[in-house]
Every structure is written in structure tokens, then in C-alpha cells.
Image (cartoon, rainbow, N blue to C red; front, side):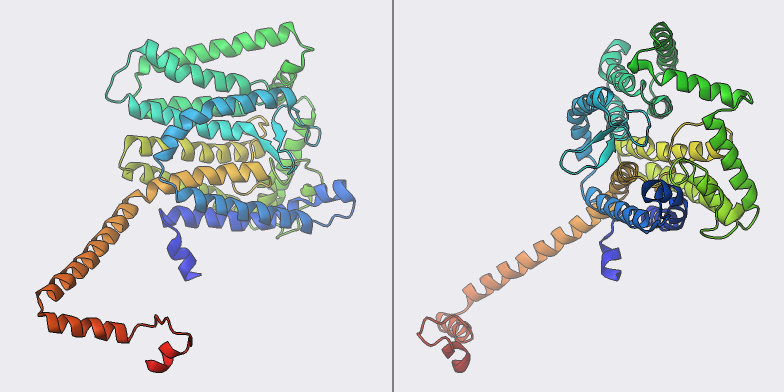
Length: 439
């Protein structure tokens, strides 16, 4: 175990917080999956869901390990190539998405021959954030005109968001907000940021007007859901989402200070998304205020560590990558917790590293791997310099030895050669044991 830990590079504190969140996730997922077990096979046995979650977490940590080995500046070039690929995946998802438990069909795609469903918007957000960080770090010293940045930066951003918006408004809003924050940190002119925000709002209103004109279109099927969720949040009109919120609030109120105990949740049998979207309510019900605040503090400490990692990064690209990939993770967690306590309308955002689900865990781990790769840059340079110095010293010793032997008389050199030959195990005789016997 000690050897394995020593192989982990980068910020050990980030590694620790991620491991704590992942370890804590097993009990809530094991407990909250009971309703899925009853619906799936009628027995209520959640062991299969626990094993599945364990496999997702293990694969996720392998992803972190593999990705953190890759120098983060490689992703600078990859983002420009990957963005058109992401657009193709988003378009395919929009047209040929897979239905999961009756949910909207245009969020997931199914990987051929494997059967794993994958939410392409999570991959798109990672690629887009890295692309924005690459552009901002590249143009820091060039002061490109707004027209150039409009084509090279904002057109790709709006194309990506336009493909995510019809199926997932909350993810689109989160990505757009994070891109604006990233450009602000990257010292993009504020007057241009204000123009982009206004343009984004205008485009959203135009989309809603078209949706009102064609309400029966499958392309605009989610617009009605957005409106009803906002209406239910601002009024007391009963609805399916209102039912979920009420059950979540009952779960949170039942938890009190110390909770009902692990596995003793009652509302998990009534919440449709108890192991994913509303898992925080189950956490508070079973572990009380202590458990809920502990989870909140872990995410805040992780955010604080991301700030430190961004500050320590050697390059502007590294700083922006940590902010662009780390902050959305924390804001997503805050949104999930805010929905559970009815501070925000229902959004469908999961709790990173705790909610069940394969693709969401893996994409979170992919982001964490890149962030840790940024944090390990300094120590990698030190290790490479030390290894280079050791090789240089070893080579110098060999050269010194050869030069010393050349300065010896011929007779002494022949004696050294014969002595080396005497102890060689190389032997061309027919008996393979002669080398050992003679020695």
C-alpha cells in the first residue's frame, strides 16, 4: 500500500478529499438503491447496485491515475481537435439519444457492444473549458480584436451550448456561467463579457419563442418541463417535481442532528431519484445535520484546495484549467444540495463522486486527473532533474574508469581483462555447467 501511495503524484490533499468522498458514497448508494431494486427485480436486494457502484469508483480512480500521468499541456492541443468530435457526439445524442427510466431521450447515448450509457454533455463541458483556457492563455499577450475572439472563442462556445440546451437547460446554464467566470479570471475585457451575456440571454429568449411557436416538436419537448419546474418552485401547485421536493424535505427534517442511522432511511422508498439527484436528502436523513454539514465542508475544502492549486500553477493555462475544471464540480455539488432543500428548482444535477452513475463519476475523475496533473508539474521537474543528474554522474564514472584503464601499462590492462574474463558466465563449450564449475 505504501508503494502504491508513493506512486501517486500531485497534490496529496486533493487525492485525500476525493478518496474520502468516494468512500463515503458507498453507504448512501447501498441504502438509497432499494427503490431501484424493488422496481428492477422486486426483491429489494441492493447488493448488485453496490457492486456496480464499486466498479464505477474503481474505474474512476484508474482514470485519475492514468490521466494524472499525462503532462497537462498535452490537453492544450487535444482540446482543439476534440471539440469537433464532441459536436458530432452532441448532434448524434440530440437526434438518436437513449431513454433511461423514461427520462428525456436526448441526453445519453449507448456505447456499441458494451451497453454502457454515456451523457455526452459532461465530456463536452470538459473539452470546452480546456479549449477556452487554451484560447485565453494564447491571446494573453496578443490583444486580439473582439471580432477575432468572437469567431475563435465565442462561436465554438455557442455551438456547443446550442446542442446541449434542448435537452438540458441546467447544464447549459452552468457551463455558460463557468465560461463567463473563466473569461473574467483570464482578464478578458469586461465590456465584451457584458455583450456576450446580453447576446446569450437574447439567444435563449429567441429559442423560447421558437419553442412556443412549435410546442409539439420533439426538439422543444423539454421547454414545457422547464416552465413547469419554475412555476412549481414559485407557487404551491402540486406536481411530480413538487412531490420529490416534499419527500426530500421530509427526509431532511427526519434526520435532525444525528440522523436515523445508516440504512434506516424511510423516504428512499418514495424518492424516484434517491440514489442520484436526491441522494443528499438521504444522506441528511441517515446521518443528520452532522453528515450533511460534513459533506458540505468536504466540497468547500476541495474548492479551497483548487484555489491553492490554481495559484501555484506555473502557467496561465494551468491556472485556468484548474479553475475551469474544478470550480464547476463544486458548483454542481452546491446546486444538488440547494435543490434538495428547495433553494433552487429541480435541475437534475448529480452530487459529484457520491451519486450513483457511471459516466458522471468517470468524467468527474477525468477532470480531477487533469487538475492533479497540473499540481504535479513542479515535483515532476525536480524528479526529472534528479534523474538526469544521476545518469550524468553514472556516465562520468564510466568515462573516468575507461580513461584510467587507458593510462595503465599494457601488462596491467591485460591482467584486468583476463580477470574479467575469468568471472564471466559466458561459455561456448558443450557442457553448460562448465562456467559454474570453473568459477
